[in-house]
Image 1 (cartoon, helix red, strand yellow):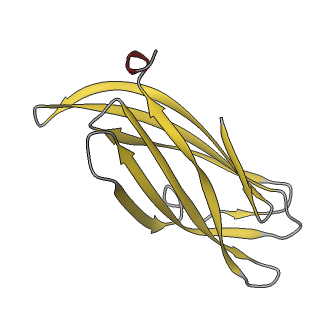
Image 2 (tube, one colour):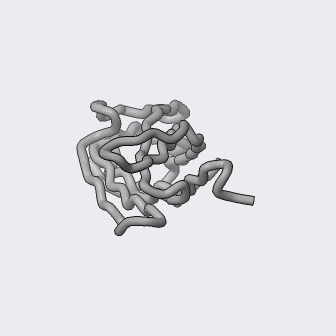
Image 3 (cartoon, rainbow, N blue to C red):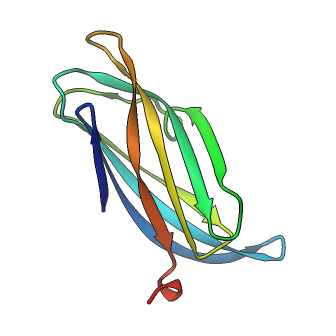
Length: 128
């Protein structure tokens, strides 16, 4: 598990290898990840956007930006958390992701970023 706390927001990530498949005559490696965003602060916050840097051992780094996470902009009250799962396709059996969430603090209307720790992907057969 990969964990990081920024301004009272704890982000924890676990990953899984989902398998391989062929698409356009190339093998692709599917990875899943589950992220839990826990509000350890005393203020209610909302996740408004995400930024990802996706690293694939066989390709250039890819940047992905978008609103919310999996179609939602969750509001997280103090002591509560939001958990979601998503996935990533890589050309290599080894890679990583890192990024940040854009958040808004409902108490003072402050916009801030919460770091997502770098988490690694590795197919079981690719590592010793």
